[in-house]
Length: 458
Image (cartoon, helix red, strand yellow):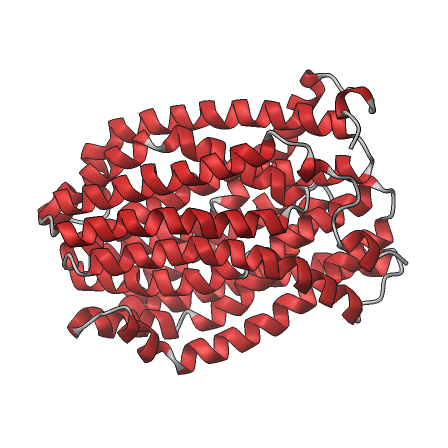
């Protein structure tokens, strides 16, 4: 393609910065809703005992594998809607969002039914035994109703992000988090439902959020004369893009699940500490991902409007911001690490292992900031195929590192620390290299490369 710096109007960086902040600041609050759900669940369940916390950690790994694979419902909907907005075609944007919601509903019902029926088998595959197994099965089984809601939330959030609205998801997420905490406290301690109460409370809160998104999508469609019935061509187009994004996400989830398998062999103390460390990692990842969400929305819109120079300026600004944000969060995490464990558990062994893991995690935050921003940029550009292939390459780099940790048989907190060295420094660095090499080219910025542009055009 021609040199983008010479073929499109240039928008001042200051304006780009304002646009990024306008989307990223509210997106930050909305993105951390799910990790806040996990943090609240971990804090509430953690005081029940190590077995309960370890069981929830194991079940959460399985649950969020399913949820993570379906995140393409947001990641494919956002750029599709944003590109249509950039083209000045609002009805087309709303139709893409509607089809994404229908796809979410169908997939959610299928996965929830399979998960409820196969909960015991899934937990057994993770190697859990005794009380840990029992609590993991309970939590996983009663989280299934909320799985349908989470997929609808993904699609609904993707619609609003594509419409350049991140404030509404912030309001919905804030209300959902508050409801989740109140319900969990009432069901876990008030009614004595243990980990089952935590799963049920979270599912109810997730459905309340999903219903709000469904109402918003319905209202916008009706206001602009867009039918609520799905266009199956549009659904298939979403599925095609989503298949590449699913492969990308599958590589990420395999990495996380393989990590859980290794830490499970290290014993319940390290498994409990790993659950807390991974929850904090997820929290920080979603915080850093606020810039990635801004990237998805803005990059999609500007490519739809054929402004590649603006895309380059936005990318440079967000990479710089992401790296600095990673530095800041890393410093704060390193300072908080010695005291963080006491917030979740009174077990001294878990606290000690968690402290070491968090120090390693803190060291990897600048790399994480760079990775999450570039991931959002390429998703916004519709570069799903490259992301999928890069994900497989990254996994091929990580698995040998993970195997080395397993074969070393390092005991206690040191074993968990080495596990996090492999994940937070090794795996994330591999992702940084593959994403950085792609971003240095112009191939991902080919205008009109997103297959949804032709599939959804009237």
